[in-house]
Image (cartoon, rainbow, N blue to C red; front, side, top):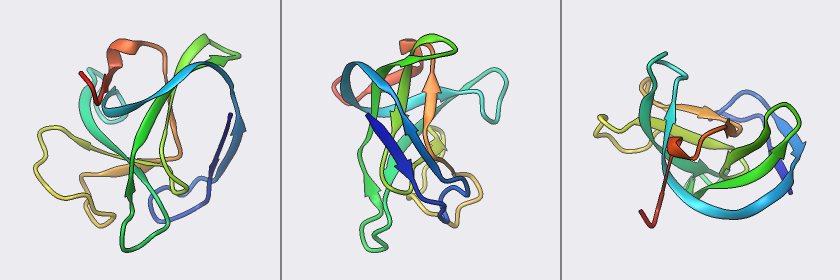
Length: 119
């Protein structure tokens, strides 16, 4: 599978990467990340597109082979990557919010750090 993310207002980094799939993609709605807190925090996650009228799209997690870690969960979204906000935050998705942030994708080692749509 390929992940391509353009440099954009959601995340400055552009990425074109190839991964070897090791399982099916599943829709993910929350991730636990230590991006801002070393203890980790649960965050809502969405995919982000280049459509200004409808920028939200699903985010997915897929088990892939990772050359450094063996197997990892690749979390990906739209052409503009993924966007996250803490679950304690009650605000709409917005590129203008200082409490939200974007990434091209995430690589998570543990399934316990993912909450899927159907759970």
